[in-house]
Length: 179
Image 1 (cartoon, rainbow, N blue to C red):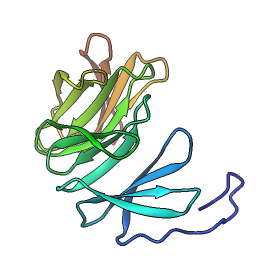
Image 2 (image 1 turned 180 degrees about the vertical axis):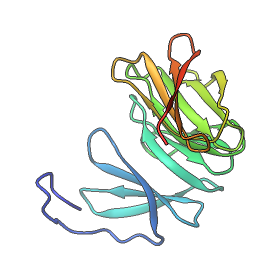
Image 3 (image 1 turned 30 degrees about the vertical axis):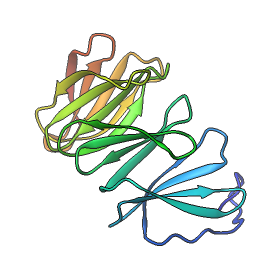
Image 4 (image 1 turned 60 degrees about the vertical axis):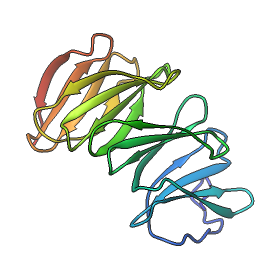
């Protein structure tokens, strides 16, 4: 645990190596995916306690939505949406290798890349339905949305490009060569 000024404040041991971490909006809880495990470590940062939540699969990336719900991508192609209290709300069947995700600034959509099927899935955060699936020529890895919510950028590491989509129309705008 580290203060905002960078001072070490303590530690909380986990039963496996951490892979990714997400912090709740109130900074009270950290969710940590664990390498080689089907569990998420849910860390109470004030009490410095840990409880483990099983996804039954291979959790990878984590991010809290605007409602404070943690979303967990899975190497097996699904996305788990939990309540803030760590109860499973829904598992979304997507492709074959859900990888990374982000949310639009207004919180109404999640953009989730699927490395295995070469797609970006757009999911409505209110009803948890897939609104669109967008093709990526190569291997999508990370995704980001511009602060104004107009563009989504997908890193395609097979082609060394950023694939740029218009968020409103969900149409590809361009590829930017970066590698």
